[in-house]
Image (cartoon, rainbow, N blue to C red; front, side):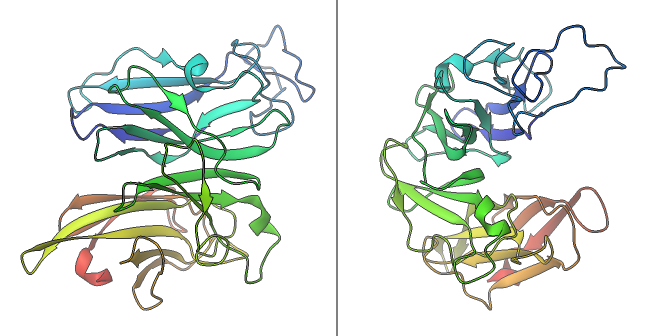
Amino acid sequence: MSDANVLVDRNSGTIFIAGLWMHGVMDTTGRWVEGLTADSAIWNHQWRNKGSQPGFGVKETSQFLLVKSTDNGATWSKPENITRMGKQEDWWLWAPAPGQGITLRDGTLVFPVQGRDKTGRGFSTISYSKDGGKTWKTGKRAAPESTTENMAVEQTDGSIMLNMRSGINNRDTGRTNGRVIAVTDNLGESWRKHSTSRGALPEPACMASIVRHRYVKNGQEKNILLFSNPDAKTARKNLTVKVSFDDGKTWPADKKVLLDEEKSRGYSCLTSVDEHTIGILYESSQADLVFQTIDILEIL
């Protein structure tokens, strides 16, 4: 019912996967449907109509589940339902955002999340744990406009920058087309608009990925931000990886790699394979999923 998110605790090595689950189907009016069978034609979705509703119960709202592995994925725990920890009762939905979470320098675990507020309108924020994943809290909405899928990155000053998909970009093909960007200094209790919001990173309303990559150059440790998405305003094409050397303030036009110029579903997720190599998993025009490695020197 929703794309999963993977978070690796960089301190303990524990892998967390967050996913969404619902016990059955609610119709377009929010009414629980009884007596479903394998042949039932009724279908609805948590992002459509009233497919998920306020409350906490399995017959009211989609459930936020976590599984974890402490042995590099060889075995996994039973799913843990953390819906009551992180969801406000009047929200229609609280769900992981697709991609990956991060471990802050102080050890805090952060999942990028999305949802529908008490009016059913989309929002983006973060959910975090300061005790290794035992308990979770959720921040406030990061932007006043309707946003959904997002990814988070820690800034060099310790703040968190959230890079968000905006449905407005389906209609905006002008100078204000672009990812919505917000920053928090207090784990989502409050947010401020970033200087690059709505203008620096064009998008055709699609999921995107942002990560920090660390490497050594001339004996000195360096780090950059990498961003991937369909680099277009009207169609999911030109899947591109871009780089920022200044915490996302600028994205030089001559520092990017085009991976796929044709149309596709366009989702992607970046990672650091090692100091010299980044990896990207993406939906391409040639296959459902492609994993590709890129030598960092191709971008630098």
